[in-house]
Structure formats: C-alpha cells, structure tokens
Image 1: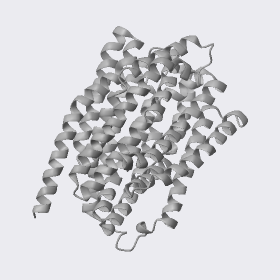
Image 2: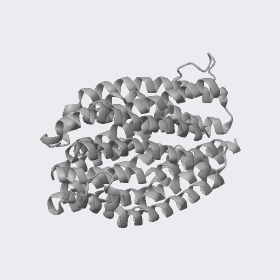
Image 3: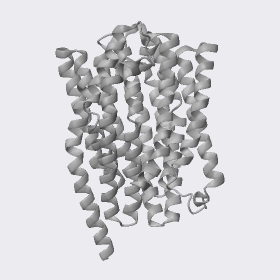
Image 4: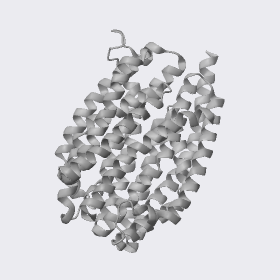
Length: 440
C-alpha cells in the first residue's frame, strides 16, 4: 500500500491539475461569458472524452510493455519499445488531428447541439482538436516516465502548465475577448508546455532512455506488442465515450438549462474521479512491473489494497456529492440561475449514491490491462456503452432528466459485474504463465 500510495499521490495531484484546466475554463466562461457560453463549452464534452480519452488510453497502453521490460531488467528491449511508441504516436497525431477537425461540424450535428450555443461549441471544440498532437505528446512521455516509476516529474510540469493556464485564461477571455475559443487556446497552450518540458527532461536527465542506433529501429514484433496494448486501452475509453455521447445527445435535446446544469455537474464529476484514475494507474504499473519480475503474490496484494483504497474514497466522496453538490455547482453558476443550479445539484446527488462502484471498476479494469489482458478489459467499456445507451434511448423519453442522472451509475454497476470476476480469472492465468516460464 505504501508503494502504491507514494506512486499515486503525485499522479493524483497531476490528474487534479489536469482537470483544473477544465474547471478554470468552465468557471471563467460561466461567470464572465454566461450560462449559454458554459453550455457551448460543455455541449461536446462527451466527444472530447472520446477523442482525448483514446489518446490518453493508447499512450497509457504503450507504457505497459515499457513497464514490463523495465521490471524484467531488459533495458535494450525497453528502449526499443520507447522509440517505436514515439513513432506510432506521431502517426496517430497526424491522422486524428486531420480527421477530427474535418468532422467537427458533423460531430456537433450528431450531438444535437442547440442553435443558440452552436457557434461557441464549434469554436471551442475545433481548437481542442487542433491541440491533439500536444495532448498525445504529454500523455506518451508521462506514461513512459511512470512506467519507470517516476510519477513526480510529470506532476511538477503539470503544476507549471496549470499556473500558465490560469494566466492565459484571464488573458484570452477577459483581455483579448476571444470567448470560448480563448478558453480552448489557453488549455491547448498549457498542455503543449507540459509535453515539451517532459521531452526536455527525458533528453537531458533520464540516462536509461538514451537511444543507440540499435534502439532506433522499427520492429514488427515490437509494434505489434505496443498496438496490442495501446489500441484496446484507447478503444476502451472511446467505446465508453460513445455511450456518453448518446447520453449527452439525449440531454442536449432537453434544452440549454439542462445542458448548463449537466456541464457544471460533469466538471465536478471529472475532478472527483481523478483519485480513481491515479490509484488505478498506480496499481496497473505495479502489476506490470511485478508481472515482468514474476511476482504473482505482489500482484494480488496490490490489486486487493488498491481496491480497498478506491472503494473507501468512493464512499466518502459520494457523501460529499450528495450533501454539497449544489454548493460546489456555485463555482460555475450564479445564484440567480436557480433552474440550472437545481439541475446540477440533482445530477451530482444521484451520482453520489453509487460512487463506490467506480472503485471496483477502475482498479479491476486497470489491473487486468496491467497484466496484459487489455482485450478483456475493453469489454467492460462495451458494457458501459450499452448500459448508457439503453438508459438514454429508452428511459429519457419516459423520465426526462432523471434518467440522465442515473445513466452513469447504471453503466458503472453493469461493468463492475463483468470486470471483477474477469480480473480474478486473469490473475490466475498470469500465475499459470509465470509458472510455465519458470518451469522451462
């Protein structure tokens, strides 16, 4: 537990700082530009999660073979994985940026974005898409550093970029009056700074990653292993986000009041979910390194203790959302907007009842990925997508915004029923593979 927490705390604070980008954007936009602008920023949050989640998940997956090689003491193999991961990420950046920017108007149409907030939504989303290369740069390099056991350095660079983001938000929105596009420009610029700082640090300080000519070769087997880990993790985030897009489209159809309330609630939800991601990532790296070292008992202990921490946190923060959701929503919404405040508070209150289930879901899913069974973990994302889609397509017409407020929880519980026993099965499979290897 001590090792997991020591690794997770800098990662947690880094995740919180990353979410601070979004919270600062939403707070300044909502308070200065008004609730319509806030709705414009939030109307496409699900598709941002789809695209940026795919980037983050893929880069995290690329880090798993690096962690495994590092744990096994195979440094030449590790460096070759890092080089090939960089090449794949460059290609992914070009393709995703081109496709997403071209499809931006179509995406907003599919999301049923109301006409009165369409311009703000388009400007914000387009700039976010243009910043995809910087998102990939930071996520890949931070994933590599974490695979080597260093979660502190990415955190330090995020602190710097967060402070920069605050200043740029105020400059772009208040001084330059660039509106919603200014909020997106501030976020992308800050993300670029954190990625570039990671690159400079690795080149100058991380001797173990100094590349030789032998390391800088594209190898079919290496590329295959990276894609086998990265794509399923990226797809898992994307598949999950498809359900969120269906949910958001259904909510957008209820009008701008519910879009604004949902946006405020989502910002708070994303912030409070950061500890789940941090603990899950820590347990995933811990499992990957111990898989490489052939220590199954430590894998089991890491999963068990990580799950205990995550479930306890989920129960605690759930109470906060139930009793303090309305107060927290005042970060983004003025007291005069009573209907929007009511919508945000209701969404957060309903989330709070089932927040503990995220502890089970995240730890078991990330552990399953960390020991090399990314494909099985993807199906938990499929389960989430189906559950959210069914609630959004079937029950929103019957129960309106109340159905939206329970869509996430339905997805979390459904996915947990699958991934918890699957994780246990995969640990047993990993134990058998290690035993066979030692027997040889």
